[in-house]
Length: 96
Image (cartoon, rainbow, N blue to C red):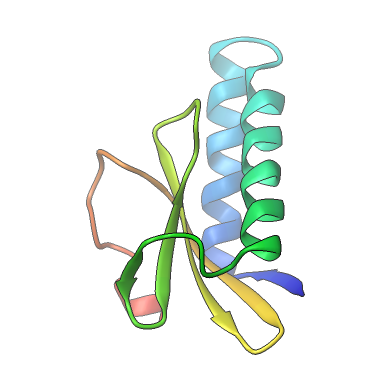
């Protein structure tokens, strides 16, 4: 299984890493590691997370208030959003 990011999802990830690193040195790396762990779990078990609407699913991060929105497309997982859970829900829906 491979993983690809929608360009806006990649920008969201980069912005969140930068934000957390600005809050406290090393926190951005912690956030990046948390997202990486979620991506590994998603790729190992793509159907393990709740369905938001076929074929979309959301994996919640453990330590940070973020979710990874993705779809499984054959042997690829497409990351559509790395979204903050308390800001503008559903803003990413036009990316599908």
